[in-house]
Length: 365
Image 1: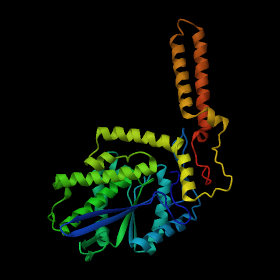
Image 2: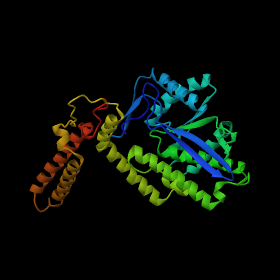
Image 3: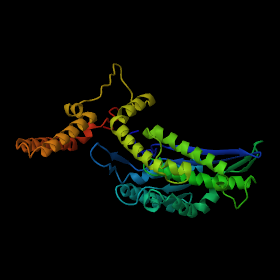
Image 4: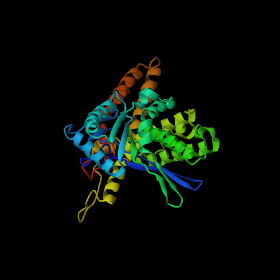
């Protein structure tokens, strides 16, 4: 929950293998995809007052980490198409540039690795996800070569999948799920045509019941992955579920974004410690007793209290200004309350990282 990027061994956060399986007309077909955080040594510096900032570690080591990660993938899956959905501008461009530089070196000496940068937000924006079709057009030949698994129910193998698409954004949740659902749809159409269930010119969208089931399957999949990692359903899920952006979906995305921010800052630190203990990443000694470190500033400025104090001081400042015409002393009161508001705001900004619930056991604090 508090891990992003990769470790020095090339293992990445939130690595998920998804297998889409269909059984029909005496056939069984499957299509495998993988997702995982961008395999670069970095951390996301987050607190309650600033936008997330990205900090890269050891640029000299990054190409080795990327190479280790993709060496593992090629040994397990065969050829790899790496689809990178991070923004090519702004804060994410730092990660995208480091990843792209490493991938260009690797792909130049390994024909089994193909790197495709696709600036999802710039090309698709928030509502024009149909523009993803241009990405599929670029990948079509590679996807045909990778293929899919097709076998008879008696076990006779007719075709095998010879590689996978590895898709990533930052946390591999929202953009990633939209893109993977498109690739899953295209693969399923080819499989159904091969099974002679639909005609070569047909698409899933021509069959409303099948189309609705497919969308629900991938929307539920995206929600489940997102809930495990972030505590909320996936963003952009309305496009996956309904094929278009909706007002309800946009409102739900806003709520989920705020909830993720709350969980990440005030809940996930303790959860990460619990996971590290349960997974054995932290070895407790005899007599171990874990007590979260609390500084006076952190204790006194817990988020609800800070919010209540700021709201009250702003309200009192406004009220004093309104009453200033009847009572000259109200001007003084307004100045005092305004000064108090500025002081609290300054305190929050200067101690923002102390307010967060950070992991303490494995050196992440």
